[in-house]
Image (tube, rainbow, N blue to C red; front, side):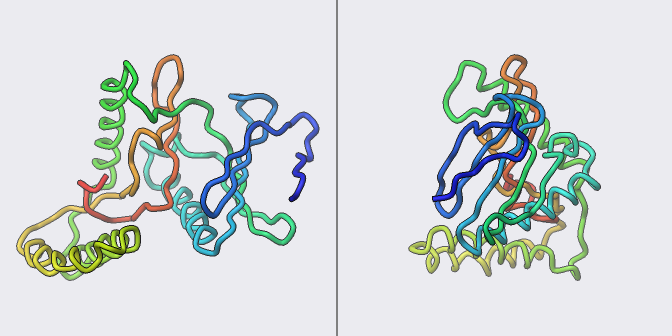
Length: 212
């Protein structure tokens, strides 16, 4: 029921997207302009917390993972509107792919190459005493059970056998995106070069490489 108007009169409303638990509003001079911003207005506490996690994660990535630093929003800040938390994020101009297109294999190859370079920069071999694998295995199955409650009981039976197998092997960990797919890559519409990687709220600082 609110009317949102940018303070900068050069900016105008570009588009609005309503998703479960949040609204996403884009402002700018024109579509594709470099100074456009996206405002995310969460309506539930869990989405507020997920945005805060993403904001902190992007800050860590920008400092510690050079291969991805230039592909992140330059601005990610929490503010408030009518006593409601909201998040202002600089928009990464470009396009996404959410369907089968002629250049799909080329785009997929570039996405895989970027993921490989991020893996190389963040790979580490934790000690068994760190219990990283136990923590990540538990998180993985808890996330799955939260998303698919009807399968929670049947999948829980896999936890102990997997933990036993992992304890026998040296397994590396990497910085995990958590939802790495073409829809979360921003591409140059002409060259198809990757301009940005978005939606880091499921990221983990040290997890299993093959999840991404």
